Image (cartoon, rainbow, N blue to C red):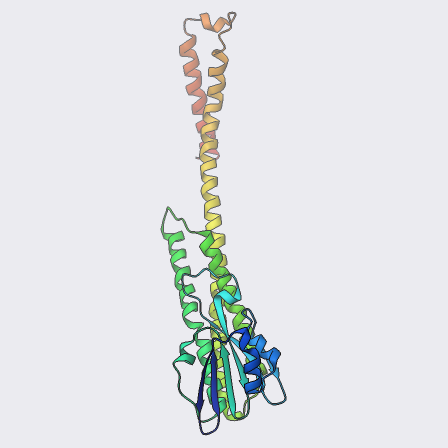
Length: 292
């Protein structure tokens, strides 16, 4: 466990990094925090939430931390959480994962509210690059489908992408819900409103990405179904031509002794002419019905 404490004029910031379950009693006693809330801070898959206590406010937020190539299907694979304990003169952050905006920061602000809002913006902005990734990847897939005749895409990768987009959207909705419950002095309302606008923008981008992913999936399946139908159409046409011919060949290939046509001098030529006429009739009917 690593503890970084920075003191300012109006408040102190205490950042607790990589604590273990065995550190829960020490953290709780040393900083006057509820034991069960500290335990919540260390649970891997805990979703964003907000609780008001007598002396402080406790809330959990999650930041996007997964790389572009990681196939994530669960919240804790896609993001990591940061727990906040906000007193009147003290801000405590607890996290197991590494975050640049926490690990490399040595800055305290004029007020504890400004510090919170700065961290909120940093957390929300972690969704900016993933939104761009998903948009670019879906554009590439769409280009493959519509501009290449031999279009082949990985439905597995598309599934994971859709799962990540859905999880990202849900996390943003949970963050939005937590922020809507927070109360700040009036002079910070504009900063909070600006941050909430950023969340709405990312939500719209992920909504658009979900629609694109669904449309691409349906389009790809429809194109494959159309290709299968075209193949079946060609096979059906060939079957229509060769089935009657195969019947005639099979009939006269039985070689029974009492088949008068076998003794006919012009039988072979007559059968060939009949087969050609039959093919011509089938071809005419198919053309008339616009099957060819």
